[in-house]
Image (cartoon, rainbow, N blue to C red; front, top):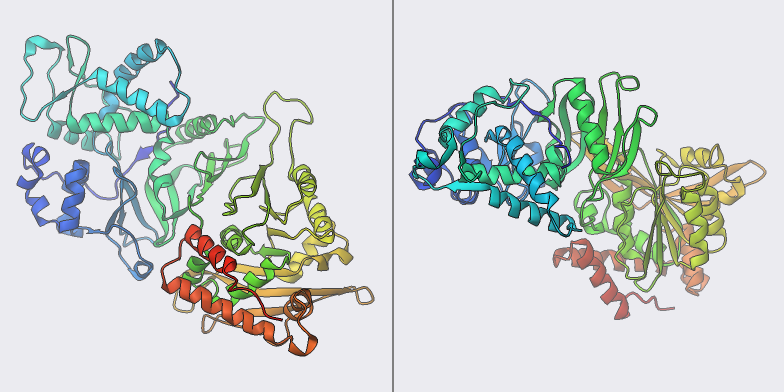
Length: 617
C-alpha cells in the first residue's frame, strides 16, 4: 500500500481534559459543555462527536467557547482576535485560534482522527488489508471505487464495541480493551507536541482477528486510512477548505496558509526535522506521479483537484529544508460579479471589457504574482459570445471556460525514461491551435517563445487572451520586446487591451486586489520608437474608487468597435451609452442573485439571444 502522507501536530494551548466520563461521548445531551453550546454548534457536535471531544480539551475557561459559523463573511476580516470554528466538509472543521503574540493566528484542522491514537492500530490493520487486497479479483479503477473497497475491507477487520458493552475475556486474542477516555488521555500526553513515534501499547483483538474499537475510533481509523492511502494525507483539510488561497511550507516548521478572510495564518501541522519533511515531499511527489530525485529536485505539477504545486527537494538547494507551495484552484471559478463584490473593479469597467471582448479585442491581464490575474481572466470568459469556439492552452490547467465548444490543451513535460521530443510545449500547442479555427485563444500565461506565436495569431485575426507578469504597461512592453519573447516592436499594437492588476494595501489597513488600470494600446511610432497607450479606467487609492478617464476619448470604442458596427462618425459617442446599458444589466443581474459563474453565463447568453445587446445603428 502507498505510504502515508503525515506531518506532526503541535497544539498552541495546554490541553485540558474535562472528566465527565464516557457517557459524555455516548450521549452528548448529558454533557455539561454540550449544553453550554449555541444551537448551531450542538447540531455540529451531534453529527460529529469528535468535535465535542476537541472542545473538551480546549481551555474554554480562558479563551471562551468559539463562535460557530456555517460560512465566513467578508466583514470578519476586521476581527482582531478571531476564535471561530467553521466546517470545510461533513467530517472536518477548522478552528481559527488567536495568537496575541504574533501577527499570524493559528489554523487548527479538527478531523475525526485528530484526538484518537489509532496510529498504534495502523500497522496491524495495514498488514491485514494487504492480505485482502492481494486476493482482489478486479482492481478498482476510479478513486471513489478504491475508497469503497477500502472501507469495506476495514469494516471486515474491525469489531465495533457498543457503549457500555463488556467483552468476554475468553473471546479475546490477548490484552484488554481501553476505554475511549483513556485512549484520548494517552494521545494528549504522548503524541501532541511531544513524541516522535506512535504508541507501542497493545491493541485488543477478538480470537477471529478482528480489532476491537469504539465507534469513534472506528470512524477515526477509516478516515485516516482513506485520507493517507488514497487522498492527499495531512493536506486533505487544507485542500478541502474553500477559503484557502495558498498553502506554503518553507522548510522545517509549520505549514503557512493564505486565507481569503483571515489572511496569513500558521497551522498547528508542521515538520520537526529535515528528514521528516524530505520523506513527506518524496511521498507527495510520488502521489502525483512526478517523483523527485537528487538529479531532478524540482517539481511543477497539479494535484487531482487542479491546484498548482511546486516542490523543491533537499537541503542542498533549499537551506531550510525541502519546501512546497500549493496555489489552490476553486472548483467553481469566480464570476465577474463576484470580482466586483470584492472591489477589484466596478460595473462600468466590466461592461467596457464585455463589449471589447465580444467584438474580438485581444487582452492581457498583467500584474505580479498572486495579484488575481488568472481569477480575472477566468471571470471574463463569460463575456465571450456563447456560440464561439474557444481553445485554451496552459502548462498547468487552471482556466474553466463555460462554453460548450471548448478545446482544452495542456503542455506535457518530458516524462521519466522518455526520449527526446516526447515533450509538448506551449509553443507547440499554440501553433496547433491556429489550425483549429478558434474564435478566441486563451493562453494561461505568456512568458517565453510562445509569445511570438500569440502575436502572430493576433495579426491573422485570432483574438488572444492571456496573463502576463509585469507591473505596468511600460514593463509589459519591455518584456515583450526583450529576451526570451522578442516580439518585434511593430507587432505590439496588435494587443488591444492591458488590464494591470495588483494586490494593494488600503489606507484603513488590509490587503486587497484591485485593477489599477485598464489601458488601450493605440500604436507604435517608428520615428520616436515609442508606444502610445491611454488609460481608460484608473483606480484612485485615496478613495478606493475607479474613474472612467477614457469616456469620450476611447480609441477602441470609437475607432475600432464603432467602426465594426457601422456607426457613423457623428454618432460615435453613442457607443458610451452601450457601456452604461451593459453596466445597468450587470447591476440588475447582481441584485437578482445571478452572481455564480455558471448562472451569470446562462443569463448573459439568454440576454444576447433575446437581442437585448444589439446596438442600433
